[in-house]
Amino acid sequence: MRTRSAWFPRIDTALPVIVGLVQVILSPAAQHAQLHSSYLGRVPLDWRGYALLLLGPAAIAVRRRHPVPALVVTMVATCAYLLLDFAYGPVFLSPIIVLFAAVLSGHRLAAWLSSVAFFLFMVAYSIWLIPNPQGIFHHSAIAAYLLLTLAIAEVCRVRRERLAERARVTEEESRRQASEERLTMAQELHDVLAHNISLIHVQASTALHLLDDHPEQARTALSTIKQASKDVLTEMRGVLSLLREGAPRSPTAGLANLADLAERSGLPVTLDVAGHVRPLPAGIDRAGYRIVQESLTNVSRHAPGSAVTVRVEYGDRDLVVAIEDDGAGGRPPEQGLGGGNGIPGMRERAAALGGSLSAGTRPGGGFAVRAVLPLPSDWSTSKETT
Image (tube, rainbow, N blue to C red; front, side, top):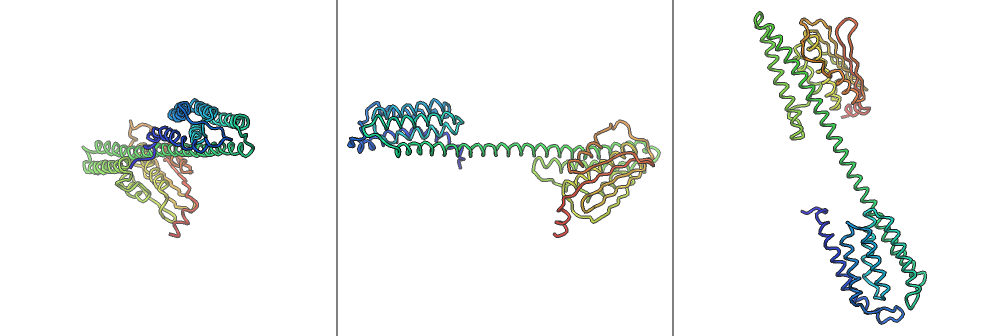
């Protein structure tokens, strides 16, 4: 099925031909009655009349590339046709079309000025250049004819501009959403990779350290590496599948998976959940999970072996996530992992949701992270009533 835009080139090609045929074929029929009216003073069409009848349609053919010259040529041809006393009729069809096209193409001043000039010509012509001068009714009809044409053209122009603006805004909004989605996916990939690769690095170092003297403990570290590599592949597949299919193959990371996250971290983690546990908005649920994940990654990097407490509090108006470690790691921090962008990234996540995040050393040693993520005002109510 052809779209509307596919027909426009054909219409542009056919319109001058149609208008030319209408003016050339119907003008002789229109003059038949007018020739017998002596007060009109009309004369039969000759080669000059037919040439002027075809000049307007020829100008219509170039109205898009040269709207103002096409407008001038058509108006002059119409005035010349009338000055030669040829019959009234379809000759006025061409001025309507070129006026309409001039307004739509943005040449409004030229269209209005040419309409005023044509009106003044018609007033002078109907008063002094025909046998039976016309009065105010005739002049008002001409003015109404021109004003109606211009008014309809202006309405169409405004509507076209509004549609174009709406399409532009929609396109910009689509680009903005696509950009935000790419940033979100990049952040998700960063968090997934940073956590699991850091975990793999720490556990691999532990396995190498224990391999000779405590092979049974090295086996535990190697098992953690195996599970972490499987998890990173699963999560990456889930994130990347959004690019190909628009839907993840595995559940999105959320607070419901904190127990598995704590178990895979290789750290002694105590998980404390308070408040009325309930489903949360997807963005807040994912952000809470990623903040805990990044915090555990930082502990593995800088204080491996430290005991960690993760507290999640479901409030009526906000979600509070707090992660604290005692800083008493049994092994020295791993070197060569870099500073990363963990804490600034967590702050950005919280700020993007209208929340806040604080992070710093604890008075008694260790490190603490606390995030407050506000919940939508109607979220708890809507969830309670469903």
